Amino acid sequence: MGRIVLTEFISLDGVVEAPGGEEFEYRDWSFEVDRGDDGEAFKEDEALGSAALLLGRRTYEGFASAWPQYEGRLADKYNSMPKYVVSRTLRDPAWNNTTVLTGDLVEAVSKVKDEIAGGICVAGSIQLAQALLAEDLVDEIHLMTFPVLLGRGRTLWAATPAKTRWRLADARTYGDGVLVTILERADHPARSDPVR
Image 1: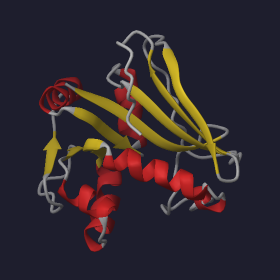
Image 2: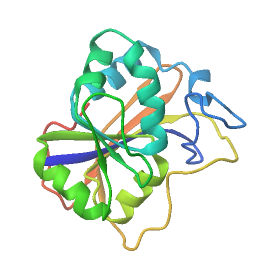
Image 3: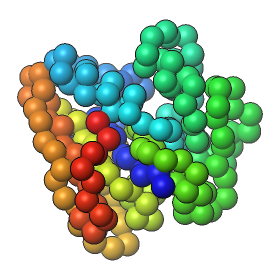
């Protein structure tokens, strides 16, 4: 059975909007802080260790316009792995190995979890991430926290219908103070190998 792994670049004040180039007052804010070679390796290993991508439409369109033009291990992984897009408007995805999920979110994502063995990486995709948290479908949260306060922008944390408990599985600092925390659901069976 698959695990939903939410992975986000996040500021100290919880902003996850536009860390890598989208339209925003503080465009590319995550690139202003060096995460070092080890931080880069963490993100690459995280992606290479994932079995599939689960994305919202806007994040998918950004990935789909960028990754097909790149070469290398990471590009090969992204371009060949199964990709699932939650969208009511996307009809004919052009990126290789993409499936559009429509209808009930819980039903569609639960089916993907049943079909995929391993980590199902949700990168960015703010609205989808919030919906998955609200529906209690997330198994792990990977936060790469940058030491910056943005003061505005869309945040990851939205209201959820119930309290959930999380366990800190790992925490490391990379580069110029970029903190990576890996959290697992406290009431899910403990894993000895969180996706990294």
